[in-house]
Length: 222
Image (cartoon, rainbow, N blue to C red):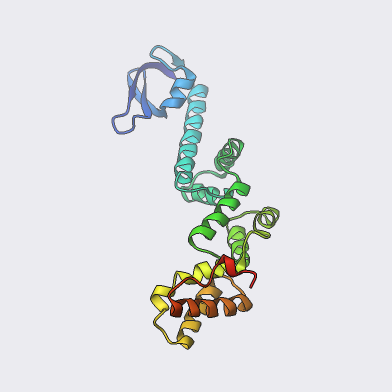
């Protein structure tokens, strides 16, 4: 595919990509950043080897862009990013290069991801320490990082209260037995142990009847 560049034009639908013409015929497209980095211009001769190198750089850039879009929604673990790129049928050696680069610039950082995951769960969907460990291991976070992140990070009773309180409006009208069964099962699915569930269910039952906050972090030492 060697030849002399006769035209470089920006794509109409993708302003970040250009079409390259060799000897007055369309040859290939590239990310603009790749073309600019090579200093491509009309009259420049491209050998077969250089064309192949440019196409490889372009494939890498597209893979990086894809991974960054995936990361833009929320932090991801290395395993999540790798699985996403595999789903797009990218070659494993290319994926390895992307993972290495994103790790170098700290866009992939499993320790930071684990911190985010625990804090996010605590804020929006509380889980037990056991459940958090299971989730993080499922995300591919190594055991040492999981231990460092989760150990002592969860007040089990306070988290169970926060989780159960989300169900009070829907279940507060039930008789005690049904209330206990439904709240208990809900908390069990979030990994809380029976002892914690027993205490929290009773506090939530009192809270539902009293119409005020009884179950919460301030009760953890009671």
